[in-house]
Length: 88
Image 1 (cartoon, rainbow, N blue to C red):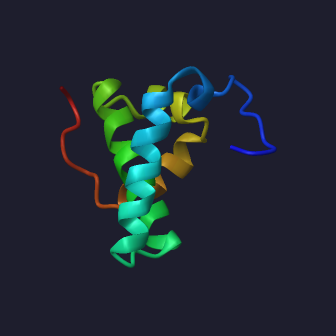
Image 2 (image 1 turned 45 degrees about the vertical axis):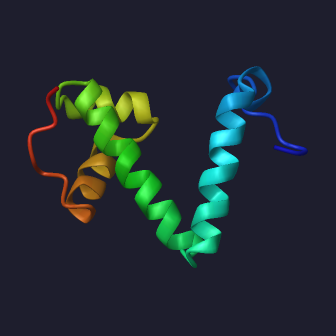
């Protein structure tokens, strides 16, 4: 990520495999004609879904892990229709 540093370190510098996977995924999205907005929404949906699962459906804990207010998380759960059971 040229020019920018993530506040928790650079996982791409530490894990070149992750960098390669991300680059391939982005190449595939571009090749398929997926827009940035569509890709961003799908990544956000998956990230929220996986975090909720990892938190056994606990929205307060998931919101903290995601770095967002619980009300924002609730709105995104509604937006992405993620009202199902997210327990592992």
